[in-house]
Length: 232
Image 1 (tube, rainbow, N blue to C red):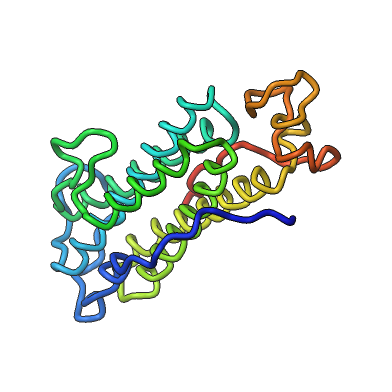
Image 2: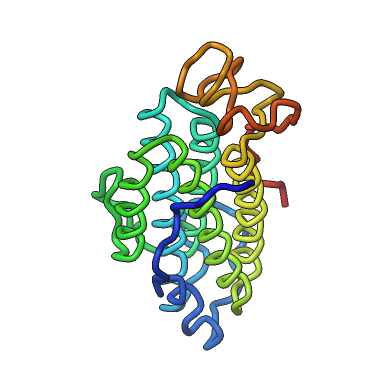
């Protein structure tokens, strides 16, 4: 669409942690019940689940901070809610396998994994520059999340973990479409918010206003709603 993206980020190798050693062997598949641990995770699976938890929490925290900074601009506010569901799903796996939650004792914006912390710090600094930059952050974050999750799913995971992470991939692809649409100036729910909007505001906002750069995409509809995790 003739835009220059500013969301470039040097490759960080933390995603490789998700797959390292997973093929070396896994515990028996856990039953789909909550509560006490029903299976024992290998060290590799423990590392993968803790990283996934940090990454999903980072996405939730970052989108919440962006929504707060830009008056609940779409699609950030709604996708924050969806990211909480993603985090809840991973937290269920932590409980099921008896893995310590890396968020224990942490606050928003602080993460156990150094690479996740670097991602948050870099993207939050970028998102604070403008809402356009924040849209680019949303695109970059979802691309990174999808790549990390797919790398993990491709490894030798227990079937229940594979199923949950596969649903997260599908949800993240929907998030990516929403952020890409916002970055490309397409409409949110058939309405537009953004630079050049009819009310003269510079911010993209909640319902009834334009979303997009320079008012592009006035005739295009898109949904800013967020996916729930599929059943099964």
